Image (cartoon, rainbow, N blue to C red; front, side, top):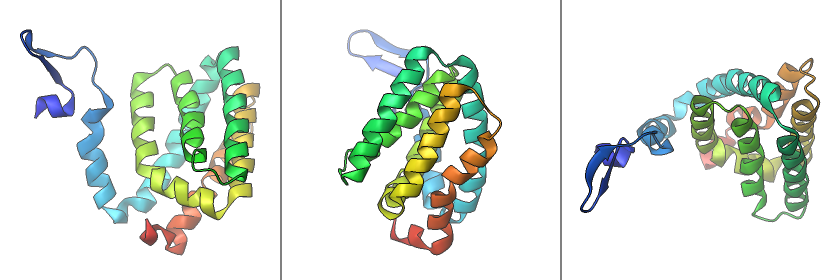
Length: 177
């Protein structure tokens, strides 16, 4: 069980030992539990508002010029793929958000953010299908905040970026997920 959770590793002929760091698999039972409880959709939305704002604020303070360039490139890749309705757009979207998470340089935030992305992946895919233009505008605003460091509109940008997610929850489209 501990090996499944990523707490220990076993190597034939070398024995079993504690891992130096815990992998994201430690969150899998929590992820499964949260996915099975559809009633938690509103709570997930509330958590995302708080988490996304805090993660972006921290990422802004630590972002390098390379990360700013990477997020610009990833945004344009995501936009191009999304406009062409190419399935790889979903992966580009995930990578866009991982750039922000990794810029925090905080393993707790990175791992929790990865968990949140996994929880929200079905909603994100549905959102990309439903409201392409709104999704792109919101990603562009987040990219601009990340690159400029101007946090004056961070709360509005994050809340607006979650409008599609909220729309899916409120309209019952999440039942199709």
